[in-house]
Length: 369
Image (tube, rainbow, N blue to C red; front, side):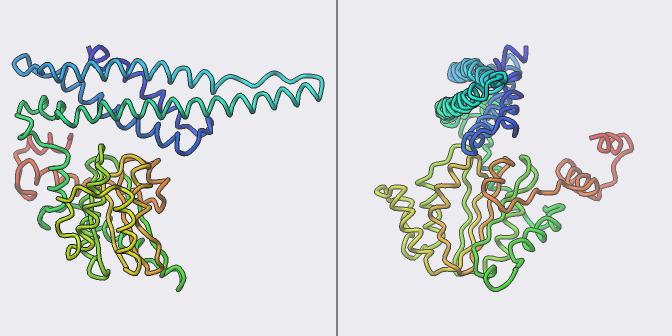
């Protein structure tokens, strides 16, 4: 039943993982696009399973069914393309000839063929990425995964954005196991290697799987250090970013005096916003957090606005995608919670009291979990 519900996704995802392996020597941008596809398709697979497992009295409406159909159809098309990629990449070079001339021409032809193959793959991956984005945006507009999973109206369903907000504004007493990671992040941001290094822009990219606490830890460090800077901003990107809105948000936080009403102003374009941001940051020592980056191309756009001005500015990025983190640089892989902290957090969430004495059967179940 799972295979019927999710189309070709269960067999497709491992193949995309193979394309990311070093032996295929694909261009960095292509690998970034493939990593994006893999992450997005994993989310789609989870959403399709939720749709298929909904109780009879909570069956999805027609809009959800249409979205699920589109995802399944797309998964078969992508798998066909991926199979062709793998076959073309794994095709061996011509066998070695006795003639030196024939060997040279054979090798030259092989190199030319590989270059054309990689270019063809890059073009096709870019097209697939645009198709996935289109389906993704449709899901975002109608909130099909959250509305079905929770059996709530779309406006009430808990969204990833609301969960991210709860991570930003948790009480200090509710935070568990964040001290070691936040202290290490501070150390990396403030470590200095001489006078020249002190003036350079420092970027640390926090990476870890969803739910590990990247947003919370970045927020703790931001609140701790922002008083040392001329200006600062904390923006979230998300899976389907609105770049104009993100850049406007940066401008608003960095200069509320001049841009207090910018979120309501319709005439701004991406290039105009980038130019304005660079002008504002030209002489400032700034501290900016860019949270929840899924796609390196989004970071590239934001990065154009963050000028290197020799004032020792700092940037934190967070992502669940290790490939994106490596492209950004300054990777800090978040350390998962220890067993003690995991148990403490679990009891706090389930029972509302981390120190509550549990009945023996509940304590045993907690330990198993």
